[in-house]
Image 1: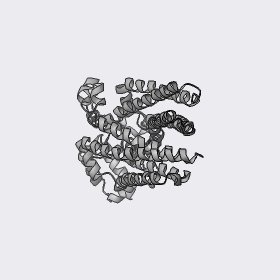
Image 2 (image 1 turned 180 degrees about the horizontal axis):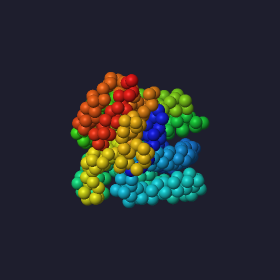
Image 3 (image 1 turned 120 degrees about the vertical axis):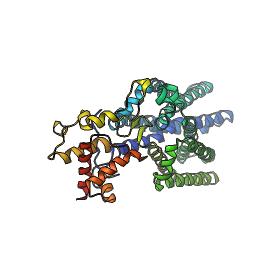
Image 4 (image 1 turned 90 degrees about the vertical axis):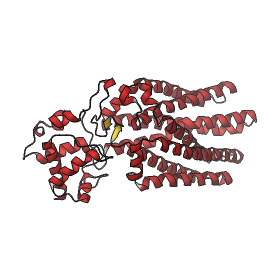
Length: 436
């Protein structure tokens, strides 16, 4: 086990979530933009309309800077924040999918090289060669999505992997194809939103009109197909995820997805009817609306995976909950309950490993940091504040809190308590102290 990254007022998971949600915009743009570029560029050559290439130049520059500078930086941010927020979970993914990630990095290198070559060879090489460069980029970019979706969907629904430990049993799991279809279709809506924003800066009204009308059709089609794919995705969710979706997911997140979808459809319809009326400010606001919808969807995906970081294998607090015999991995519950989390976790002050009356509250806080801080903060005014939760529940008796901790074993959203009876009493005393 590793040190705990305790983030004041925010949990480590929220920091990771903010970076990851931003990353979806440039990463999905990188997958979708080149397909739109290839369509417009092919149209320009077939119809002998070189003025269309002004859009290609501007859109590719946006793709280069936003997706492959800011997007790459946020990608590094995801790796860094995931490494410190949940190192055991990330380690588990790397050990199981190291060759998948290696393949993804190979195609990512093709993307990075491809976008520079595509941008700087526009109007400098023959038409067929330039289009081939674009197609190589577009296909390589989509393959990175194919690979990453397998790893992301594995975290929610690992399929037969817990029994077999097989790479492909976890990769091609029950939600893989439906989630891939959601990401593939929605990416065209994201690409369309950015295309319209770029077109707002074009001086040629005829070109602007063509781009906006074409992009709006792509956006409407992508979002409607995405909505159908979401319905398929919901049907493939595991039973426990369905339960959390109906009982735990906040109404605001569901509203955020629906309102964002509806607003973007109306925006694309309006853009198609009045393409020259779209200016840069509304176009940027539309991208902000997209972000709200994506944030809501990604938060829902994270919530319905609870209480695990890797479903039916590792809890969100990095405690391994199930055996994976094919990998030689054993569940830790019995060992922790016998010896105690304070004695097993290596980064615990030596004075807190043995609990006594003098250090009970400090020991309880240490246990809360280890077992609760992946989702909750210990600050009064923080997000998902543990003190506020205890005050809302009104627990004033330590024995009542001990019963609450015992009941977590049957609660579908939070990991069960792991530790000795003395550690349970220490944690209960610490939680009760919030109401005094």
